[in-house]
Image (cartoon, rainbow, N blue to C red):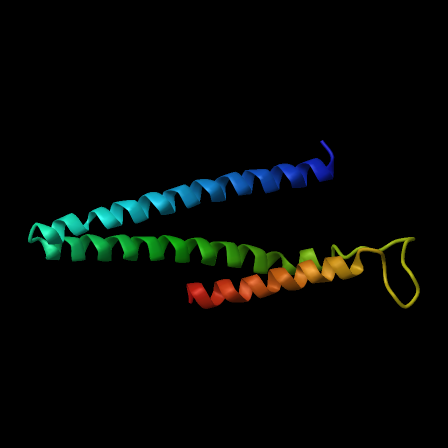
Length: 121
């Protein structure tokens, strides 16, 4: 399997998992809307308790995931940074072909890591 195939497969796997996560979000939203039946039947406190539990658990799980991913990729930044394109294709004064795309992607990852830090902190 080529590196391109590995990257494509990784993207497809992640896209599939994100689609599954989206379906779970829709189901959680549907289940939470059903909670209003508790209030309509005079059990508002039960709706409040369940809603608070759901949101607390969701935020804890999401925060833990973000913190784990942020830590994992921040620890790898040095290694990732060394993956910059080099070689015979280097153009004097302009760097290697792919240099701009590489640093754009690297900057994007750094930006996302800062956003993850703000959300998990």
